[in-house]
Image 1 (cartoon, rainbow, N blue to C red):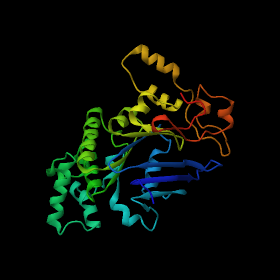
Image 2 (cartoon, one colour):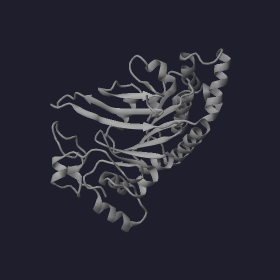
Image 3 (tube, rainbow, N blue to C red):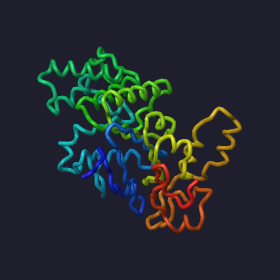
Image 4 (cartoon, rainbow, N blue to C red):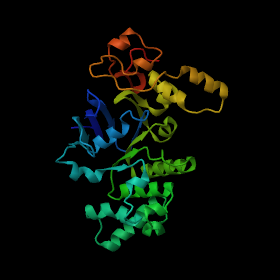
Length: 317
């Protein structure tokens, strides 16, 4: 039995892609955990497998291999319906996540009806109003349709819908990437407030390390389907051990032109590309300026370091 609220063990998701001879390992043997009331930030470039991992954890896409445990119970095809109330997701694009044919109030109430929460319609309407206010949304917008709301309002509706069934764990899949800067800050503050008020655990997925650091207790860095570094959020940001983590930090914009030039000189060359099946070396090796023959020959394992850190690198910074 797991001692953590959520534990993922060796999760793998493989796709067959037309025109590609080898299968694509979008998620490759990922293990991680989230404790009650904790936020784990998951960061990496677009296409590295972050969203696929989140969907596989909730079995929105069935994993190819590996195990997921929630509150000590294994999550599989037979148990997922019973566990669904405890685990919910806030999706990246709030416009496509909400049914355009349903009002905002109807979308939020849908989970209440499915799980038979509330004595009657009046009780559910009252609960919908309460949830909207918790998410920072005017309850008077319950009769509106998604296209009548702004992007930030739609994402707040998505948050309210996820909270409707009183989950203990949320997966937030890049919840602010489709919003403008001011709306991003407001949504992040709302999520922080809700986590503190409700004691929620959260897997916060994003490509922006600054946003991840703001909301996370720990951070896991993902590259081409694998976790390459994890540890306390401040340690990851201030003292990265993996060259890829350093590259993500260097990619963040800065106001100082001299600092920006120095970062550009440290940036890895090329673009992320999945290695062919059978490649034995480090996936980041082709882009890493610290790579050696050992890196091309031998794939590093995720090993413990000081301060609760884990890093998969033969030559950690």
